[in-house]
Length: 205
Image (cartoon, rainbow, N blue to C red; front, side):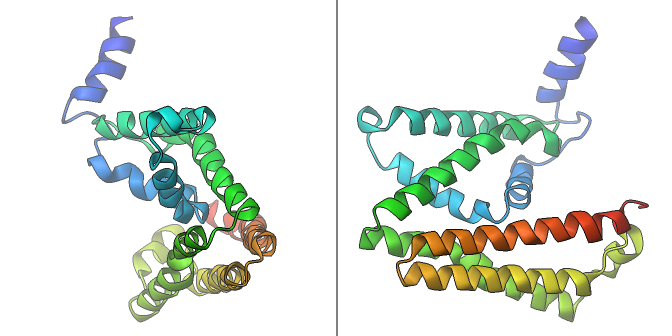
């Protein structure tokens, strides 16, 4: 009992030299990668939910915010961190972003449109920029150690950026359902390809 509760839990949470020690921002890239591409819409989903006073906030959205922030802040404060620790917050993040898309599809106020469409920027602009950086200076270390084929991943990144661009186009044209399904089908196709063609090649590593 002492070993489990004190050593494996309390000491790993508090001790600065605990096993799996990571900086406080460790879960930001973990969440961004694990919740990609919907992570791009999460900041706006959270900020939009927080705009209303607590007394007027929808209780379901308040529950989701509490669920997400409690897990994220609690595990970010811990000294010992592993990517699997924050798995329970992904359903809350999914529902928050889903509620945001639902509101956009149903209402479409002009100010909401503009702010919402800014969330596409990382997919349409930053992803190709990262691809350009990797093409100029490829991280060959990961190719040797993990079997990464960056040319293959480059094509996938271009597919994601292209699908996001088409989705953004539909959003600008105020066709939110077409925007949603374009992005959804693009990402689902990419994941199916990764599962069937890429992960088996990485498995030996």
